[in-house]
Image 1: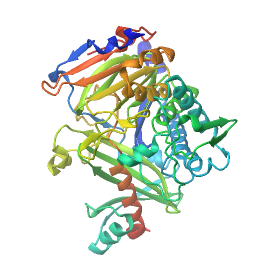
Image 2: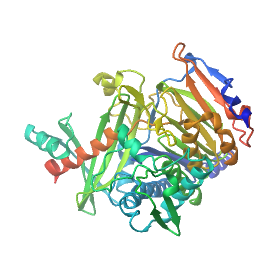
Image 3: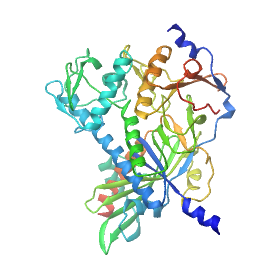
Image 4: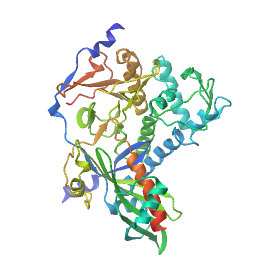
Length: 315
Length: 181
């Protein structure tokens, strides 16, 4: 009897929900004392994801990003604190990576067909890059006519915001995943699976995480044909070429915005990524498919550069 | 510095093809739970099954730009203390690899108040295009056992795009205007 009462007192409820946001499925799971408070926390977490979506959409005319693309060359554009937070991190990473991360690659994405052509937008100069984005207190100026797109970093930021909502609501464990950019907290380790780079519905267990973020970038669902070859929306900003399709890159970091953005840098040049990963205390795991055998080679930066990421490889 | 590309020389691990897990499926909630989440203070859900006429179908396709595959609309008129507050609609979409059951809440003003996913399933092969494969999930409630893989919760990596879902929501809004309003 006592044992049962104790169990009831310490019992907790886990709920999981999913909604279409940020151009993908966003899944939020939380564990708390009772179903009503868990559902409320999840609803609030979805609210903040929807807010990030509305502010940073490339497609919507009234988003902060569209207002920057339309007006910031001629006048300073005021943006929301969320947008500023993402832009600041984007600029920090651009500087640290020597331009291997760059949110001004939108015209290349449009050329390859990943982003729509936008009517009513000024013509771009074609010469600009991240150095021509100038941030001051909640205002943005472009010193060249650029087209920016934050989809390589904003999903991670939305995940971080949603996770903070769950924590502030007193949840004991949680998980937020926006199309696979995921972050977890709680006492139990959660196994993270990664999709096979060339056979995306096959799932491979990679690491066990108790807290922190894992973000993966790969071409499997987004790849498309451009001039006779398969391309991904993972653009090397220095050469303006797209990464190939046989590779997936997963980055582990304390927060999901950092992890999300760093995947693009590792894709752009895996050989030079280590110092940057160390600077942000992150670890990269790269999967490369062997077309002949169907096997997957797993490369792990912790083999040469230890960070305090104790997450173990589980496969 | 020149040592930094050493991580690319030798794989830390090689995963053989056979080790990879089977297809992935999640049941998020059943119809009753979705109704409660989307209309927390409503007290009555009145089920209406509407069969679309050929004219209604083409009107929906014309205004939404999305093909209408099923002629049957599953909708609930939602009310609170006898006053209508909107509609709850249940629908499904599928793409190359995925089959999704979802619900849409439409407020009394005719705008989308929320979208919730009930079930999400993925397969490796062409089963999604097979009506019999899809039929086995119809009417399943959360908690019913349908084990494809229960252990997989966390997938890091690009998820299937939600284009089919966005199209589905557009189609349901048009269906509301044509057949329920």
